[in-house]
View (tube, rainbow, N blue to C red):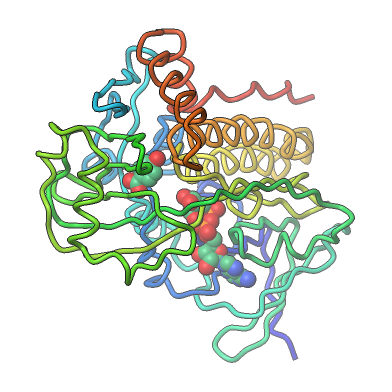
Length: 396
Ligand code: APR
Ligand code: PHB
């Protein structure tokens, strides 16, 4: 016997995509229920990048969850490229007219979860989607020992790369585009002041390194490592030595070492699923696409999908028009592919792929060109801060 519930939009996944979509719909008086397989504590404990494009900042403020972000977030007007023993600053505000905001994804999750209230079902198991091609899709799941059926008008698959919704689409109806990279990122979190006021992306003969931060008192560092490497091979001492060895001497001397409070290795991949809509099912965020973290696009692409989808759902729920939801997949993918290209380009430019001397010379020549050419730097700045949204077609 199933416990039957009803909502207008069933959302699978309570990551940034799912919670932001639910909050925006709620603000427009549209009922949704979010089904999350993990606990709130587990979801909030995930350590993820929080480098926000200004359009993401605006959307979070529009959703009414930006107060702490604007108070505690760090405005970044630029970042540095380190290569060949030198530094070159990319002036984001001067070149692209907008900054980035550093504010951890953990904090965004917390702000969203605080604001989304009881429409989130945590620890929802065995989620399965049904009848997405009809006008009465359903989601079944179990929670607190009860089997439930959620009847709805739309399903948003916000359940990430490993989720169930994309995998529910018959293989003949969906195309996967993928590229994996022959290395990983070893990341640590440490309660030490960051090496500088802005991020540093380093291209070094031994491999890539990134100096980032969560606050003025908590640093986030990464070094490129072998794909099959293990964190057991990286005691803190080795990490700090390797990080400093990949930075120019002046920056290396400013690194403040301390005990790691988190250490992990992540593989890198580019992945896009097309299309992003199947009848009443919409794929959102990591459920539809994954980018290598080099360009810090993951969260921003998820927010961009949510922006476009919520506009379409609001239009439909208010006046029955389907213009914007019919455009969702095309508009979302237009942005996704441009960000996928940029993230692939930046990853290829900054990482060591082999010992091939010719490839390294090409990388250094391109970095030299970026440092000398305002046009090249502007292209980098435009992509890094986020491209403008494609104008939506005028709703009929
Ligand atoms: N049933 C219910 N929930 C599920 C299921 C399932 N079968 N599978 C996955 N989930 C949940 C996960 O536990 C997770 O909380 O869906 C959520 C997906 O969240 P994310 O993976 O964070 O994806 P998204 O919300 O699109 O956010 C993208 O998060 O992973 C980072 O780098 C990524 O910054 C980007 C952002
Ligand atoms: C991070 O702070 O985790 C971070 C920042 C920038 C990136 C990737 C990760 O490009």
